[in-house]
Length: 275
Length: 261
View 1: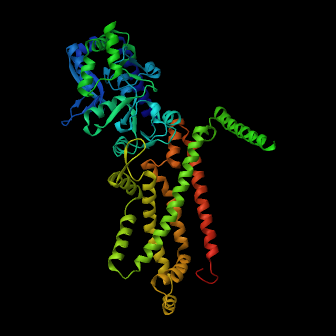
View 2 (view 1 turned 30 degrees about the horizontal axis):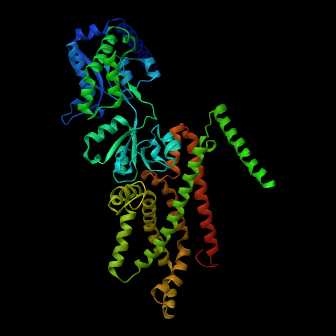
View 3 (view 1 turned 180 degrees about the vertical axis):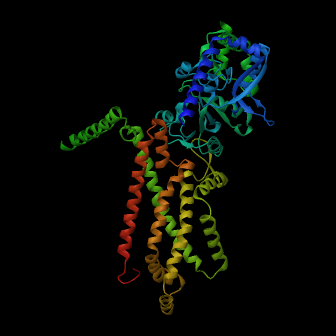
């Protein structure tokens, strides 16, 4: 037992030393030398990262990863990550780059190198029944609104706007079904997901996505290792993202995968062009 | 003049108490937000009221279903008997949560639709109504069997005596068999109704804003899971306690000296 423990300590030490060692090297040169770029993407968040019928990882973010590899002239390797392990994968060097729908928060900026500019953002919206004629959150007073149990905006929605109990379910399919059955005037959820659902699913023809600017838009960040953020690798990624925004690559990809462009991305692209 | 001052005084007292609970959070990290916050308290109380309404309505309906079902079981019509048997098998052999989902998501949308005040064609029955239907029929199926056990315990000679007095089948059932049968089956009925009161929590799955539903919203907003669990347990302990107390009183009031026990 004791020996195992000390072995674990030694291994941990080794890992820390190795991390320190790679930190000093230039990761950009390393990737070019390896000839492969390893990118962590999601497979559980359609259409940003998912698996197609053949099991290949596809989506908006894998397309972005492919573009990075093309710019570098190297092969691409995609590694599936989930929200709970993506930061560790990056820290441990299992992936060179993370494009995994990660919200940009001050806490995360302390542990990984989130690249500026951010490439995407999501806010809160309502997938509203057109018959109910909902134009803004003010129209929701006293009306039933479908929601997901445990979502952070539920409390505000109920206490400030609907002032009546939300119709909240455990999963998205139940909430969607209740919406389609006419049990509520709208479904409150992440705006980008709702835009995608509305665009790809004909059963939502009689519904519209009403943005709810009452909740702040949370940006999504691409990340490299914290030590690399200000090095050549981080700078390369910052230039790449700026170019994506300027050239409209992200708008094209969003149109291709999500089906429609979000207000945030349109604005961010305009701003990048202006500079 | 006396009254208005009283009225003004009382909220101050309550406010002082809420402030005390608030201070518990700051000092010890015991977050009783479900009591001191006006919004959370109102919705928790509303949730508890919904639970009580649900329990009382379902208990009433399930007992009625049990009485009628047990009577139909003794019917001479084979088809009627088969229907009752089928009903019992269906509701007793499927989980109440599955029934609730089935009613709300599969059967509900097939109902006639009415355009509500928001301009949406909504199915006629809402989640509360479906919860009442599902829970009443679920507990009712058990109640039929419970009443049957009581009926079978009534002595043949008593029934023959009623028949010889020219009581028809319903009269014999209502005036002679049932009063005796109820006394036999009260303990079993007691159990089933207690179970029913606790099963109302499953209405949570179809978004009936009952106690568990509201509680889970509060603990996901304030991460005070421990405090909410204690509140929940205490509430159900009290609710079931009251039901048991009422049923025991009923048992005692109905007791005939020398009969049954």
